[in-house]
Structures are given as structure tokens and as C-alpha cells.
Length: 218
Image (cartoon, rainbow, N blue to C red; front, side, top):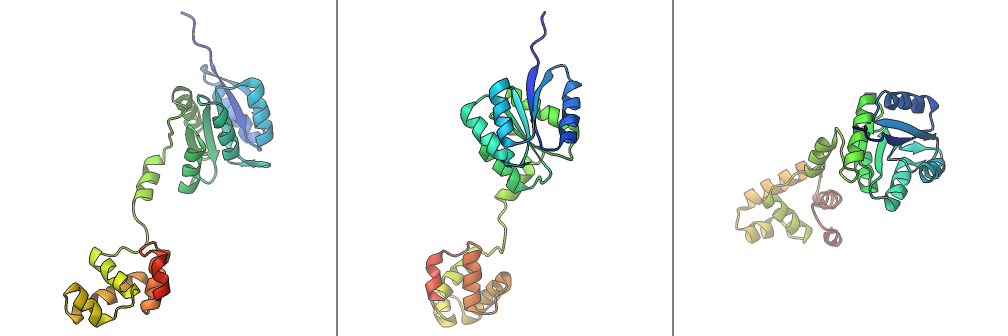
């Protein structure tokens, strides 16, 4: 039985040592062949057009743009090309930017070379299915609310304060004692790091706890 043709890889990085290291890593695996190497976005686009690689592995930081520009352009032209993004700065923002650009995989540069090869294999089989070792944790962080957390009752009190109501009016509106209303207000100030009503409302707007429409009442 004739073995399948190896998948061709284009390596894009402005550091020659990194390209050579990646080339050696891929050359150790018979299912890959390095079709070419590029050091910039423009060169990467030219080589992708010339060699029509199965997979492009690109750094994020390049002299004439970013690897995400390269990924975005290649993805617009080809739905099945594998696109692996490498970066020294593997934060959540970069990860989600790679996902939105159309990347198949996202790998930190300090990861083992075999992780890059594994990401390339994934991109050959499922180019539009994004993978990253940190993807699950990044999604968890994205879905977990950040900033001050107010209880539903505290949000009610905050909105009434933003409408210009005082302690007595808040207590009547919510059918609670003035002492309870004061306690809620005190907790709101503490959670928002505010010293007064105006600060509390402005901090709440910045944190997304209040709509901008409440700002005129400050």
C-alpha cells in the first residue's frame, strides 16, 4: 500500500534560528515536509501562493505586520488550509484574536517542538476546529465575571441611588428599614471602592454594572 503524501508546511518567523529549529522538528516526522520558509507577512503570502502548503506555521510578531494578518488573509482565500499561530505572549487576548482570525491552532513558543507538530497535524485534519492547550482555561476565565460582584438587591439599591433617591426613599421603595438600606449602601461603596454616591455610580458604570444612561444623575 502506497503511503500518503506528506503534508507540506510553510514556516513564517523573522528569526532564522527559530525557523531552522521548527524545520528540523518537522523533518523528523515522515508525514510532513517543509515546503518553504519566510520572514515576513508579505513573503509568507507570496510563498503560500507559490507552494500552496497544507499548513502555515506563523509567529505573531513580524516586521511588516502580524501573523494574525497573514492568518486572516489566508483564511479568506482558503477554508481548508491549516493555520498554526506561535507566540511568545500566549495571553488570553492573543489566543482569542487567533481564533477570530481563523487560526486552526495556537501554541506558545516555549512549548515543546512536538506540540507544534501536533498542532499542525490537528490543522491538517480539522483546519476550522480551533485547538490550544490553554483554550479551556481561557474560556473559563472569559465566562467568569470579573470586577466587583453585587447581589441582585445591591444592584436594585445602586440603580435607585443612580436615579437620585436618598436613603429614606430607597427604604420606602424596597419596603426595608432605613438601617437595612444604609447597610446595602455601605456594602456597595465598599465593593466598588467608592467614598460617596457619585464615585459609586461612576465606578459602577465603568465596571458595566450600570448603563451610561445613569451618569446624568450623578
